[in-house]
Length: 311
Ligand code: PSU
Ligand code: MN
View (cartoon, rainbow, N blue to C red):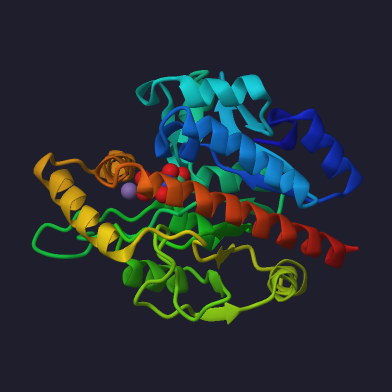
C-alpha cells in the first residue's frame, strides 16, 4: 500500500502539508468499545479536544474498502450506528481482507498504527491497548491470546497514548512482552503503570515522566536520533477512575461469565467491556469516556511539542 491509496480528510491533508501536528484516533472503540449514542458523542468530543489543544484529529477506519485517515461526520455516524456485527474489528491480519472486500471496518490499535504511519502521522491517542489475556500462558491449555497490538508496537514507529492496560488482562506479562519487543513504555505523572478504568495497577512502570515536554523529547530521540522503527507507549492515568471495590467485584463477575459462555479471541474484549458497563450501571462507561478525553488532551499536547522539536 502506498500513501496514494489512503484517503486523507481535507483537514488532515492540509495539516500534513503545512507541517502542523496531527493526532490519529482509532475506531474499534467507536464500533465495538462503547454503545450508541455515547460512542458517537465521545468520538466527536475527542476530535474537538484535539483541535482545542492545537492539533488536527485523524480518526482511522476502513470505509467501503478504502483505508481512511480522517473521517467526516457521515462516516463517523456510520461506524457508530451500524450494528457491531456488521463492522469488522479489523486488526493487522484483517486489513487486507476489509480493503479487498470493500467492507466498513473499525481499526484496532495495531491497524490504526499501520495506517497512521503510512500517512506520516507520529502520535496516536486511544483508550486502552490490547494485551496478554489472563490465562494466555497458564495451565494445561493456555489460550495464547496475546494482542497483535503488542507486536505492532514492537515493529511500527508510532507514539501511542493510552490509559494503560485493562485490568481484565494480565498486566505483568503485558509489560514483559512489551519489554521483549523493545517498546519504550512511559507513565505520565506516577510510578505505577495505570490500569485503564482504575488509575493504578500493582506493577511499576518502566519509566515515569512528569512533563509532556520530556515525553516529546523521548519520542523525538527515538525517531530522529536513534531511528528506532519500534513504537513508544505513553500511559496516562485515568483522571476519573472507577471505584476500586466496584471495579473488582464487577470484573470477577464478568470474567466468570466470559469463561462460562466460552467467549474467546477477538470477541472477548468487546464482551467484557459491554458486560462491565451493564454490571456497573454505566459507571465503567463514564470512566472510559473520561480517560479517552484526557488522553486526547495530553496526546495533542505531546504532538504539538514533538512537532516543534522537528523544526
Ligand atoms: N481496550 C478497550 N477498548 C477497546 C479496545 C481495547 O478498552 O475498544 C480495542 C482496541 O482497538 C484494541 C483492541 O486495539 O481492542 C484489542 O483487541 P485484541 O485484544 O483482540 O487484539
Ligand atoms: Mn486477542
